[in-house]
Image (cartoon, rainbow, N blue to C red):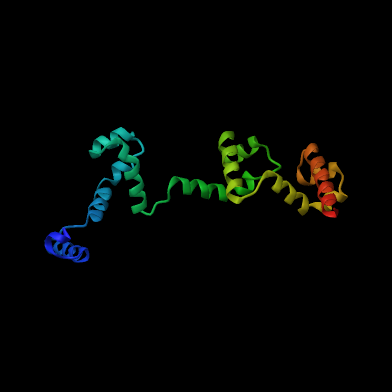
Length: 181
């Protein structure tokens, strides 16, 4: 188009913007935003299926998810994944607890066990830690008690199962031996 009128691309863009102002033509972005806001109620209606929303709005069903995302962004609403990540971080002490069973964690957080296992794994990956790292840290932080208290006393003080208290004592011995080498 620039060659046709003997102008540069920049001049053409400026002229288009000037014409848009003179003719009071809205930018495509503004038109899209106005459409999203006008159809906000339908897009946010959780009782409607994707196909129903598409039919009401006159769009393809495959466009519904994208339109919902655009509306969420326009309204500065967090994405579902952001909400889940915030939940993980808010509950990380419970999710990463070494002394609660998966069932106990699920009950405390009112979620099912598969959800807990999955989110525990994702949280560990996000934080860059392993279960073994957690155990080592716990053992090093409680080394004084592990050296001085009996297994029964450890069980009582930290609400540990017998096998876990025993494992922690063994791990402390290993860590001390590796330290001396």
